[in-house]
Amino acid sequence: MTNVKKTVFVISIASPILIGIYHNEVLQNIIKNDGKTSDILPKIISEIINDGDINELIYVNGPGSYMSIKLTYIFLKTLSVTLNIPFYAISGFETNGHSPIKALGKKYFFLNEQNEIKMKFLEDGEEPKQFSLPKIINYSICNRDTLPNYQLPAVG
Image 1 (cartoon, rainbow, N blue to C red):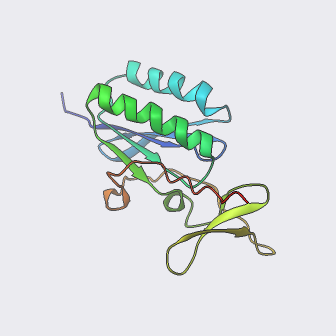
Image 2 (cartoon, rainbow, N blue to C red):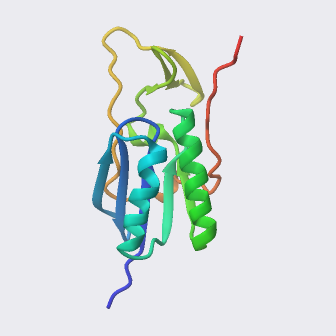
């Protein structure tokens, strides 16, 4: 029997939540759910674990929904420590073609020319792209620093 490295990749910064299951870095299955992260993430991950061991975890660490990022980070970090498996983070911009990401109200997060995250309104006719899971995991854009990238606006 061949060894298959099973990776779980979670995009929870917007709705619907996307969870990819990878075998040897190749996408095998996508789970899509419109529910709340706190309600569905533990249930889905539990089902994935019941189908066999998980060998590593990847998640989008922001920017996006503050609460969802926080819950996903705490849940996956705990799982990583408990199962003693690698845990990686990736920017949300890597999963939506560097398109704007919903922030607060009608504002969106953007990457400027210096690759800094800024917040502003969409330009006329500008449409953000949907998030998607990569067909193959690109580790060159994954980070070992998994802390959330909250990008909270200043309170004034």
